[in-house]
Length: 172
Image 1: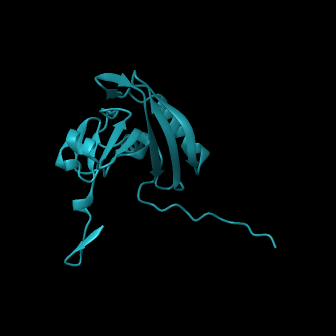
Image 2: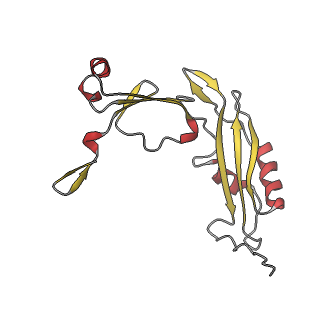
Image 3: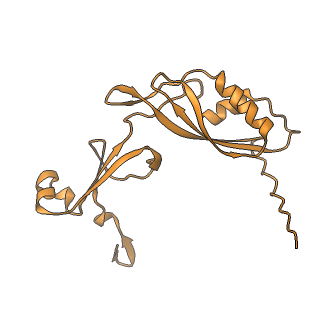
């Protein structure tokens, strides 16, 4: 990264990014879990001849697992927002959190792949029951075909309340 009048000038030294065949100025916002393959091309004569002067700092080719992410049409926001609306978890209940890895198959069915964090088993049972009865998704698409995709669900209720600190027992 060079300095231009005391200001970092990293923009001029960025490579050309091509994501699923489309040129992009940035790769910010791409979920690393959806990247299938990354290939870096050097800024040599062959690369510049193929991509033009835009490739003078090299080219990064990124292939994503899909072109269009899966969508949950029942909720304008996220899956977590939908679940927060259908799960009965009163303000008087203790704060609970679940973090789950889920899969959406090519038919739009959701299945839980892995429990990453569970603070309350009762809350987990309610989340799983709500997921079982939730509407189907619009599956992810790659080259126009429906494909399987994965995501992470982070849900904490009641919303906005901090988790209580973990109690550690130290025996001396």
